[in-house]
Length: 322
Image (spheres, rainbow, N blue to C red):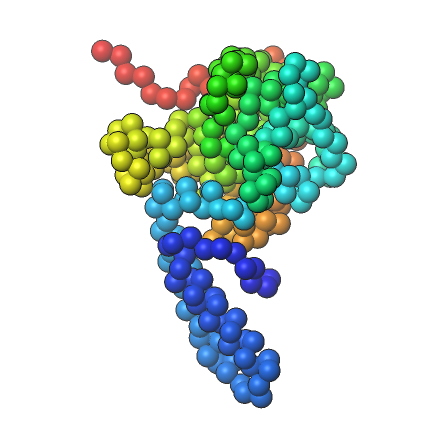
């Protein structure tokens, strides 16, 4: 696979510099009658070693940065990569259509699914249009409207979470942001169709939970799922944004932490360097999980499905009585 020109993060600078060096050498040899393939091979081996060393030892804060990478694939990217016949559904039938929340019907290898997910923008203009992936109350109400359609037609629901949090603006609060999320939490617990959830980037607070109650919940290797952003936590505890790395470590927000604590059902493998390095590979990994879980859940009696989902949510956390 050819090297993609992807903006690097601070901790990736040694990798980016070596990648540029290798590209320059390859470009030089293509125009000159000089064989430096040995040097290129040596640098590629060094690059592979540095990549493994960096990405195998990422801190929680570095994983948060990868989760926010501007080139990371979003909901519509995964729909395009793994689904067909996608028909988007708009509007909540109360107020408006929220472009930060994608909802619709699609097929995976011929099997019908309802797909719901947060959508960020690829540039500033689109980010403003999609509100940086922060949904309004109408986004959550639209999502529930489509989930109820899935229930009516006995179609599994696939959710992609990628939001820093629900939009906290005055208008959103006036239109019942907290009520919309709370209503979804209650209704998803009782939804009579399988629900499979993937945190593909940021999983921020109630904004994520508002579509996050599932029979199976997975987090991508470099995504995060947390009650608050590291910056918000740092501002509350230390009054300093610079303490965000400490907050990220304390919040236990990485996929591994969440799996070890029993909050999620599994971790979706990403290519070395993050999902943006090879979106097709990640899409295939997600697709395999969806197919496996739909096959396992579709024949479970509805009452058993709901009971197991409810107990799954109730089992999260540890309570110590005096």
